[in-house]
Amino acid sequence: MANELILVVEDNEKNRKLVRDVLAFKGYRLAEAETGEDGVRLARELHPDLILMDIQLPGINGITALAQIREDPAIRHIPVIAVTASAMTHDRQKIMASGFDGYQSKPINVKDFLAAVRATLDRP
Amino acid sequence: MSHELRTPLNAIIGFSEVLNERMFGELNDKQAEYVSDILGSGRHLLSLINDILDLSKVEAGKMDLDLTRFDLSAAMDNALTLAKEHAGRHGVALALDVDARLEPFVGDARKIKQILLNLLSNAVKFTPEGGRVALRVVAAGESVEIAVSDTGIRIAPEDQAAVFEEFRQAGTEHAGKREGTGLGLTLTRKFVELHGGTIGVQSQVGQGSTFTFTLPVRPWPTS
Image 1 (cartoon, each protein chain N blue to C red):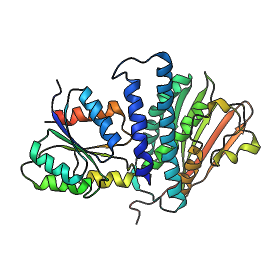
Image 2: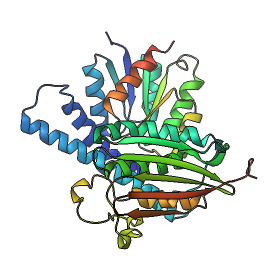
Image 3: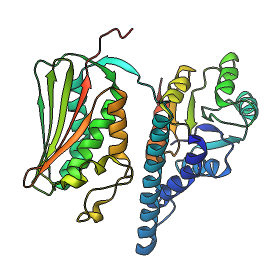
Image 4: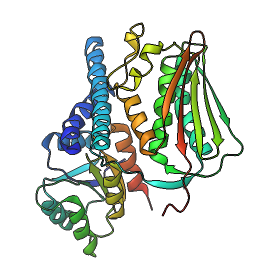
């Protein structure tokens, strides 16, 4: 049963609710942050199994937050999936080049999104 | 701007998918119908926003070619595979004819794929059941010529230039088939022109339509 802890970093309340509801439906445990700073802090505190990171955030953006996570030996191993509404090809290339473990564009496709979460968690 | 336009659609499309999947319980018939309509309209709006963003980028001169050297016949085969499901649903047969002289091609693979998919999807959409859509490529020295022909409706001569205009579809007899964004052929032409090529359509009574475009052959490496 899927009971891993997933940290969702997303500033939009409705998008957070969508992700929360579908992940909870699958049995995952959730932690949420509205800013990149809080996301990094919660990652250090909770050591989640997976982080879902929005890119455009108030304060530091998702790419900077990822860099901070990767600099910290205690949490650098946690897989981080970028979830972003900027779907332009060069944005996507820039995001993937920053070292994310996956990429989901918004609007998400719920089935694909859940499959990507599962696949990333199952990756050895 | 992409971010601002797409963010609200995440909630509209996402929550309707959740309802449509019956994740939190059954819906009655009317509710199911409405949810499916919201989902369909949300996805349509998303395609429209994506096409408009692409088009405005082209028109602002900010759309660049991302040139790579790739196997054009494999790309065509790939596009045909992607169109297969759509064609199957419409009862339309697909055929591919590749010139054996075709060499690795230098172009923007993603845009060429979109050109092929747009033309194939249009051809399938406007071809009646039992018809045929063929994709053909010919190596013509300084350029390659690619044609998508169908056995579908005829486009009247006076409408043939208009099909490339924004939000225009030729004729009125297929008003019920307006499922696209109305920008597919406009973008297709822009992508062809970005490559330095041209596109046109020929259509005759009883013979369906053929969209033909050329793409110039570029040296590799490009600089």
